[in-house]
Image (cartoon, rainbow, N blue to C red; front, top):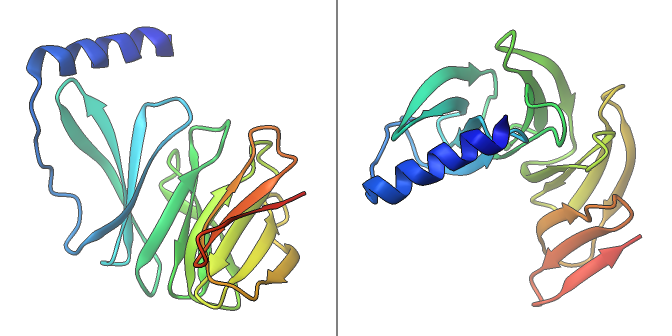
Length: 181
């Protein structure tokens, strides 16, 4: 079903070959990400909100706005297999897990610093969040509790899991990629 949807969208963009701007937030947008089924696009903003859109032919239609953070939403990501869940990382020292079916925050997890990056493990069991103090916290996605924290002695710029879920990657301010097992 999703492949037909993708084909229709690709055909639409090929035929129209144009660029359009869609108002999404009241301040700069920091992050965008597609749901695992490719049906929804989420964005996070300096205006402390996340928004979710549905792509209809050649336009984005806002499905909902998500409020609750006390500071900017710096990054977000979707659950790797559940297209109804996404998580936001904020400068307010929390992450929030949202359910698009209920349009509500289903969990708020306090962290030790201003969060700037986030990623969900491919198996959906762990959320990794990095903060401005170069601490990466690994959070159990079911219990919403911290499993582990790691303080790095270098600037952590981005984080990501391998598709097999057995390695964790960090980019740093020294021009390197660190691989953790």
